[in-house]
Length: 96
Image (cartoon, rainbow, N blue to C red; front, side, top):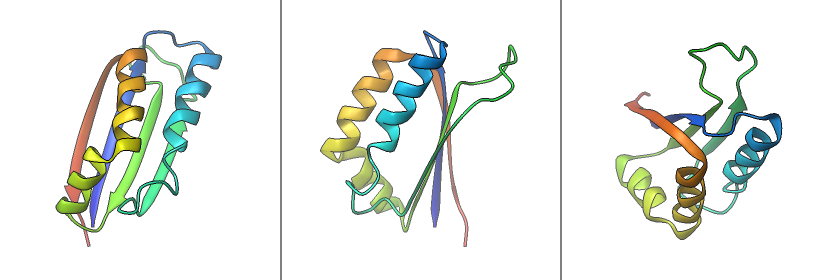
């Protein structure tokens, strides 16, 4: 199993902006066959070092992760997130 985690810090950190971005990310659910798990959470601490949104996705293989990255639904979501994010970081790891 491959876990792909992305943390987003948004340009506009208002509640409405965070909720809209969260909804856009959740819109991928059920639209990408390779996507085995999708979880989206918004930060509750709002500290200086906090990110605004966490995206956790899981895939059966690196090939499925690659297919997800290229899927038209993900490409559109990524375009939106690029337009609203200040920056993001990610980690991908393999587990059993």
